[in-house]
Length: 94
Image (cartoon, rainbow, N blue to C red):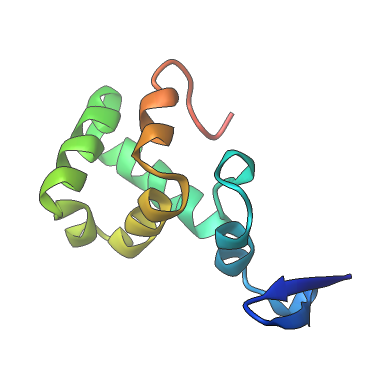
């Protein structure tokens, strides 16, 4: 199976998870395994208020200071801040 990546057709297997996610429409994007691991670690660190803490940290750029903060930043850039707001009543990992 091929996939258009920029102006080039490439094999889907040749793309990273992040490249695939960025190519998908916003409503079809999901967490990558590293993003999920970073999110679970963040939730374990901050407890029941993890969503509020992450939303606040994102506003002032402190999410990047966390361990695996680059994954948290990718999650925000890939899924958007509205994703976090829409997951208030459920855990995003099941």
